[in-house]
Length: 205
Image (cartoon, rainbow, N blue to C red; front, side):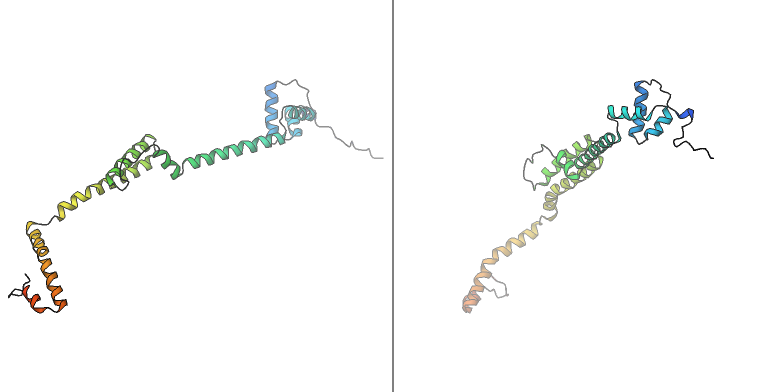
């Protein structure tokens, strides 16, 4: 007659609980592993403490996997919210709002000289904030506005008519009333009156 096997084989002596009196620091190490996913039987064999003692400590100190999962979820949610807030702070619109905060346009908003001064001021703020790309872009914008502000004076110098051209323009403007009078006489059919405005050489005057 065969011997009936033991239904619950005992673990090796080296794996059985030793009933050590562990320090608080050691228990914190055990519970930390438990929170991070280690099972109570595994920790029982590793640290030679009973499964019951591990679960009792975990419940007492809020170290159950559910508690740990809740804490991790909350921590990750807060971290994600912080990342989103940082991303919002770094959008081009948010950066521009901070750089231009408190700056008042001291003149016509279409004045290139005023816009050049404003861009230069904001570029300096960007430099202080170590926003190198923004500072460079604003400096280029300030330079472009400065060139635009100088353009009207340059245009006057380049296209001012010479004395001869100005005299010709003045002469044509003085003849304009006579041309208009001759045109009115022709429209009225008064050829004699129209002829009075024409010189023998064909000029009007």
